[in-house]
Image (cartoon, rainbow, N blue to C red; front, top):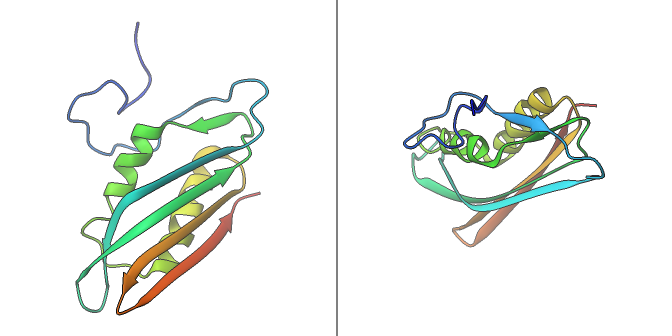
Length: 123
């Protein structure tokens, strides 16, 4: 069997794009949550830890979770504010899926302040 996935089933895979697959009949909403995401503060260079929640109603396609994990790991050494992070992930997923995607990013507290940013992209 030949797979069209670039990450799933590939040991040591690196990010090569967001893979999608046909949405199963009857699936009306998909919600993905991870608390294993880091990025860097664009000012201090200090690591920020995030919980990312992604919600969408499939319009024919679903995102493959391993490619999503590898995509989120590309932010590990990138300086980005929480709000821009949410907006960029929503935009990239909306383009890959062809549907509206809502992304909530919660930055774990640093200095006693937690930030939650929510962005929606696509139609």
